[in-house]
Length: 153
Image 1 (tube, rainbow, N blue to C red):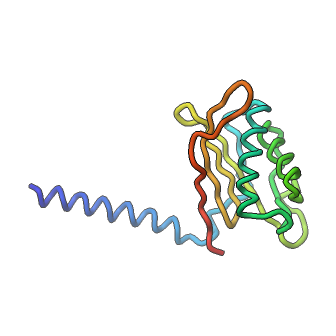
Image 2 (cartoon, one colour):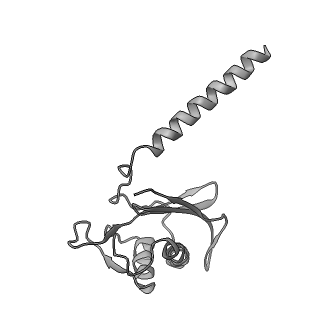
Image 3 (tube, rainbow, N blue to C red):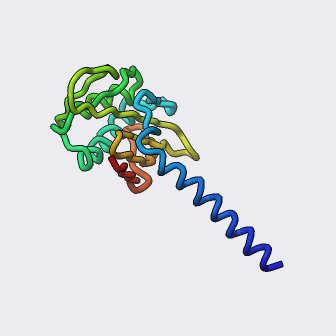
């Protein structure tokens, strides 16, 4: 009986490892710069707080002056706050996915709620940043450490 239990644990581990390995071997093809969504519908104050924090962290990994950030135009509070924050940190920002030129850095984001927190993910071809936040009337406060995933080029 114990051998069967151990075998099932090993099999589960092999399946889990195989599925995560498959995710990491897709090269850069899984990054989709046209997908940006604010499903949490953040207030302007919360959107500004989250965007400011995430762009500050992005600057640590993708410094200003390294290229033009290309984001899909978005009228959500977070989309507007993100663009403003990027410009405030000295990034050149193009709102057109087909912007011409060299050194274009496509950026996508997803904001959604999960178990009372707002989950935020910002992705570029080289790095993905994820963090959760607690909302308040005056803004937002990080409730998790920053998760950083570096992509090999």
